Length: 226
Image (cartoon, rainbow, N blue to C red; front, side):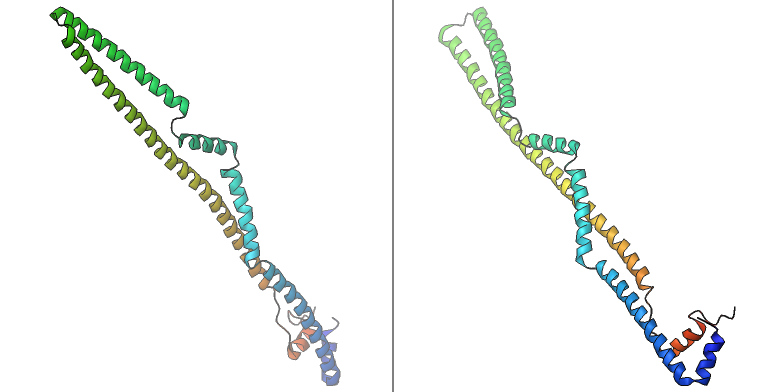
């Protein structure tokens, strides 16, 4: 910068030269400030608006999909819950019906055997014995219908419960992905806001002729006689 006293003498002895130097220095400083401030404004603009937020959202949502959808354990649980939402499959329902039929037939055989034994000991035969067996058979026929209705009701209950559980699982998957996207977006906004505030704090105001004269003479930090 040179000796500040020499600069001060120039202003005192040749005011026109001093004014010219002050104008030149002020213009140069303002040009530098304008370039610096324009770069800061461009940085702030790039960090603002929907574009960066959308990018953060996309990043977080993709991460959430990897965690809550694409993970092998999550896929296995989803497949299992989806299967349960369908209730008994054909093989399972057929097996249940066959077991129920065999159990009922076993009970029927024992009851009829008991009736025949009692009828024989009591000397009951013919039409009366046949009527007793017919009544027992009707009772077991009704029981078969009751068992079938119970299995159908159980099947419907399983479908309703399984469907509700499956829907709840799907909603938790979606919520997890959305929450991850929101979290990433919020963190990105906080980081960019901090960066913008730090950048804006470095913006410089334009110099005036007087401040340019002072800064040219003594520097922006004041007179330095060292």
